[in-house]
Image: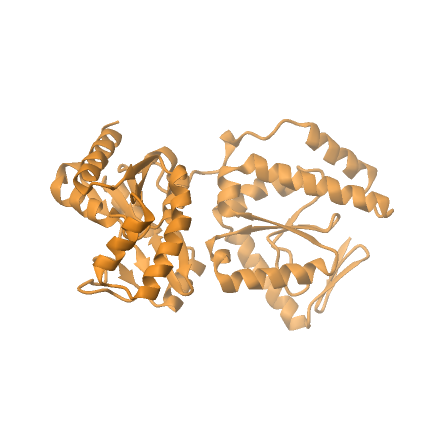
Length: 367
């Protein structure tokens, strides 16, 4: 039986407290709001946790000490968190680590999944949860604090059942039913990606390509204008949009140097029948491809060599020597992502690379 008093929450002989009654009341208000406004991934996972479907009771947005976990099983001391993109920011990662360590000190095990894992790899998520439940159940049994035999039986019955099909997932990712298609081009800095994209846009209007203008926290270069080449934001503005869930994808390339794509802009363009072009970094390209699947074509523009890349970066005359070395170091890492793209185009001859890109894009849009 669960009961509550000022600043405390009891479950059986378990005693969860907050610093004071006002803190506890605030947590309860926030928890209530969170339950009414779950993310798509949280709502989906809850459909498989609720009602003892896994053999034990899970609670969602249940205050424990000074925190509100996404899901918790008090019987097994198991906490499940579903993390959005905001959790990849350095400051938030540190906060998460501090929070996890604090709750672990009271005997809780915390497992974390990303939104993408829940939305696109649900079977694997459920299997990991089952594995954690089995381990905790066995440990409790050894310590003579086992759940009831009925709970143990229910867990075993669930484990013997076939994997849940993802055919019954609630909803589909944003814009799966839109009219346009998506073209993703990624490359290390200096590989010629932007030159090829601009050529496609100018010389082949029949493709009906339209830029998805990315947001960035870097300063404008040369004649760049806000809302044309990029939407320029301060780091604080960018982080606020991350917190509000406004980005389709984003990445912190360097400390406080963010790039990202707003969902709202893509939504409007696709629904209007435009074929949206993403000129993004390699991680952003991989994330967008994963989100849209076959609706998107991902192309990786690869330089013929790192030395050629160095020559091109020096020739730009836009970066200092230190910045160029940083870009080259990052390029070596980015080149390892090439295998994750649908097609790789080696830009050792710009005109040839342009034509090859055009043929691939044309075939994709006509298919």
